[in-house]
Length: 182
Image (tube, rainbow, N blue to C red; front, side, top):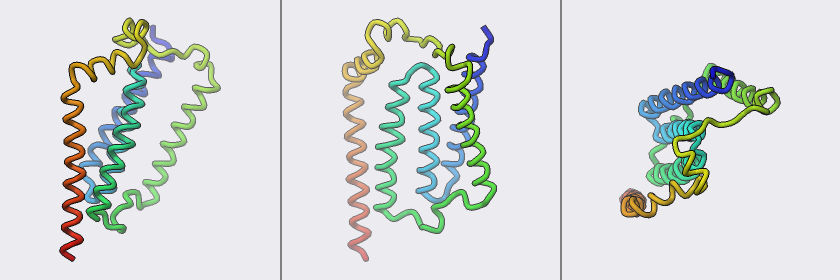
């Protein structure tokens, strides 16, 4: 079936994939850590959109809440604590061309949303069946993810939280040494 829905998913898969790749390259090439962290947020949002398109809405929401939200706030807190970002170098989009390009992309996304909400595709819009559709039908969306996370991967889950805590404590200790040396 080659109708508007598969074309819709194919186009947006490549769109979000391309935006994620370009944002990741820009993230690695930034000199300002604050600007790099903001580009990493763009990568996280694109990955969340890809998860939603793959019928994994829970993973997409967790991607936004945990990674683009909480972890990036911690990264920015550590960057600001260590005073790594100089105000003159924080802004990436200084020229008019970048601002016009960002406005055009924003208008394009708003136009797509308007088309989906008010267009003919709104009545026939349905997500494609995921790989775990049988499990989701019987157990819900969260159980197939939470079960392995808190049974088979509990140790890795807890160790990750301890490593993040150690990184935060290390950043605070390094920040305190810099203020004591002044």
